[in-house]
Length: 296
Image (tube, rainbow, N blue to C red; front, top):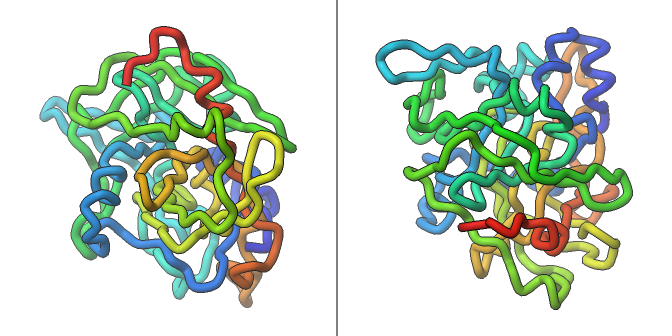
């Protein structure tokens, strides 16, 4: 997409900036392959999605005595100014980044999503921010599906290399299964054209599953390049190997997001092999920084 998030913030509102930690944009390649949960039947995909989280500002969360947590959010169209015809424009945009549970109390995200202890203290990780039934958009989740950030275990933010963060949670997660890292990548590099699966929160909207991507260039240091259909808000999304269901990397950077269409904006679409591609931090970078006490 061709108008950067920074430009959109300047045009629409300061509030949009607060909706995304991600200022490195992404793009659609070929046909938009993103799907809601209700459109997906593959049991592996649904299992992986269950351990994906939306990063939500604590100030946007309201807890009540009934054990339900409300998530306050404007629509995608209201936050960014996309046209009503834009896919998912009427869905709520409550997240600013994406994350994945990789240990009982360890979350994986992009390094630029949580950069300080203040960021950590003001962030909640929300499971189940998804559309499991057509037309039924999430406004609340059970209290047990919201977990806090305790501390940053490790983070790096290199604009020309790796960008990821390991976050210690404020409690163990017992109702979602940790995802599996591709541990073999410490001794090997992912192959060109490997088919990929990405799960996350593009533009902060409910969970989207996208399985139309593949590896373009596995050679850069610290990351590989693919053609995932991704936006701001997808930063921190786990990118899986379709064949194994293991995490191969973390979505962090890409092409710019939108083009103007009259008074509003739409996704910019590149050819499958066009534009710059999307940068995905290699899982080997993550594995090298796992804490000694790491328990999946």
